[in-house]
Image (cartoon, rainbow, N blue to C red):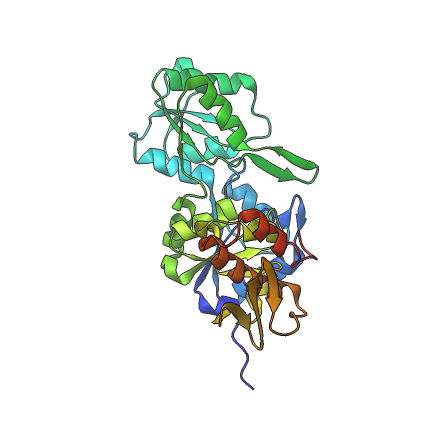
Length: 340
């Protein structure tokens, strides 16, 4: 008996987001961890890419190994690494750079040969701003003073919020905005939704982006970033965004694949196909009629399969201006009900 091919079988490599995909706060998302472990053991190349600049690749790899994953620091790509890499193309080795954020920011800069500035009075050539849970108003002030004096300004990412196990905290984007208000300047941004983290990972893995699948839970960072890099993407419902967000997503934030969590990588995946005025899978199809979803027969028992079909119907209707985003979100909310 020939085994059915799985979603991951169509790709040579994966670039996987962390929070909301592999773990939530300190706890692993076990189905995803099990799938990634099995895929790694079978020879799949896997990189992990995160907008969180506060930790070094060594710390991230150690965290992932605590779940039983075989991960080395070289497999981890942080937005701090992307920022330091970008600055290395703009500044000579040994230039002074003022880091703002967690330890991961300074570590990435040192590894690229930069001298660390501690104050605007050190005349830094640039500021690299990333997230850190202990960033102070005084440190943001030093960044603003340096930028006002002509320092280049690179931000690792502009995620406005950061989900934690205690709730939602201000993200790096909120702190970046504070410096922007003070200086009247906008930074260059190197993390997601830009392509750099994805292209760096694919280049290191030596796999073309078209043969690499991006996996994430945020449409405006993970999915858009993978798309910008020329990768297909898998959206998982285990993190920040859910069906309503998917329904209202602009084209650049629409994933090719949708699963409950990372375990879907090891399962067969049937994509919806055009059927008449709608979309369907197997013998079931759906279309839009009077701003409601109409099924040709009973909706699929699997709520996520139904969601995949409904989203294709809604995206067509949005693109043709037959419905608005609010209507799309309302209709999508009826599916994927067991998820966020």
